[in-house]
Amino acid sequence: MAHQDLHDGELKALTQVCNTGMQHAAVALSQLMGKGVSIQVPRLQVLDGSALPHLLESQEATALQLQILGNVRGSIIILLLQENAHRILELLLGKLPKEGEPLSEMERATLMEVGNILASACLNALGNSLKMTLLPSVPALSTGQGSDILARALDRGDGDEVVVMMDAMFSVSDSLCGGSIFLIPAPASLGVLLGALEQ
Image 1 (cartoon, helix red, strand yellow):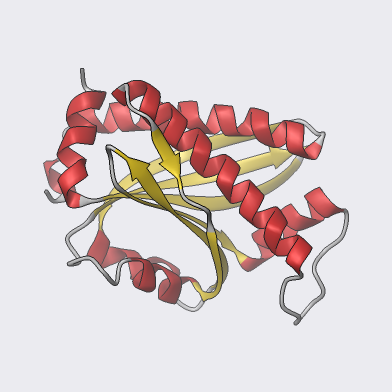
Image 2 (cartoon, helix red, strand yellow; image 1 turned 45 degrees about the vertical axis):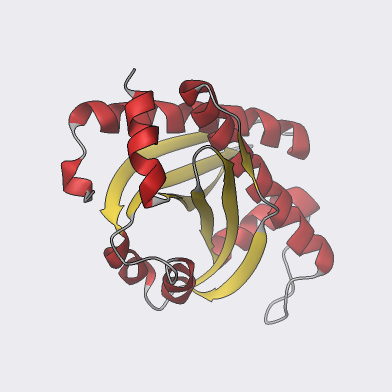
């Protein structure tokens, strides 16, 4: 199914679920940070997988990829431009990562926890709508060119995947930080997901 085949009702249902997930994630991140956190989703797009790697050419990024486990299969990628990943670490750990050096184990573990919170919140919201249990795998963290990361994530597919892209804007104690979340359902799961959301 190409993204042009999704109609307004399906897009509205997806948008509602994604916003619900981000509200839950904001509560969990507030508890983790000990600070007020809000997350807005100013834009949700549905794209063809073949177009995805071209979105972030020549931009350094950090990505967290998790597999979706349960009745709906697929993956979630949380992608942060490098400066935004560093900003989140500064907010959580009180200092910026050292310039030009790989992330420390503590910094990697912190970003993976943030990724786990965001993915779990999205999947919980989806699962509630689908009346199914959806769980995230342990996140895998990678850094590099954003386009390369997205190309590798889609490497096993046929280029015809439907990808839900959410632009997320984090607000933490009046500091703003943006990122993108990609929901990539397996082709066999897409019809099940959309059909259940509209009920």
